[in-house]
Image 1: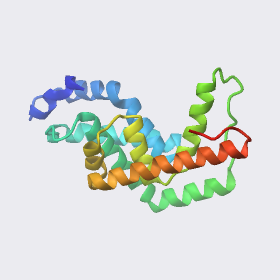
Image 2: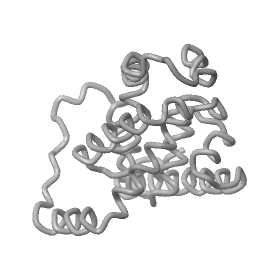
Image 3: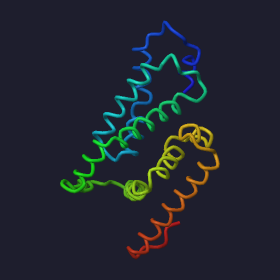
Length: 189
């Protein structure tokens, strides 16, 4: 957002509390959604989002505008989520939870439109993709990041981003086509 362009020129004397509040208002939901998308856990997404904004508060004067604020926040979110998922404690707890409390909430009976059903079906397929493929699909489809911005966030080449995005789209289309055929529906296009 252009409203945050001034941050790349600030070195000191800025009301960091006010800026943090503005950033949380503008991007808090995006940060939480991205953390959830990576971790599949509401609790972890809550913790990660908080950690991200603590880091932003601490590093506010280090932002130099080499990327957009959104790209910067998503990169911090991704790195924080990866750190959390790498921790041995999280791996043990998540593995324990999978074996002992494998109860997912059932979908709402009050779905109002076919669009919502289709979106849920697509997101269910997307969430089953490997993390590397999910990330690029989310950054491209939901956040509208360019290939270069995605490459910057992921610390990979643009070619790698293109390859992952192509593989992600192909995998989603293949899975949706298979599910449609299993359900006796027309082929997914």
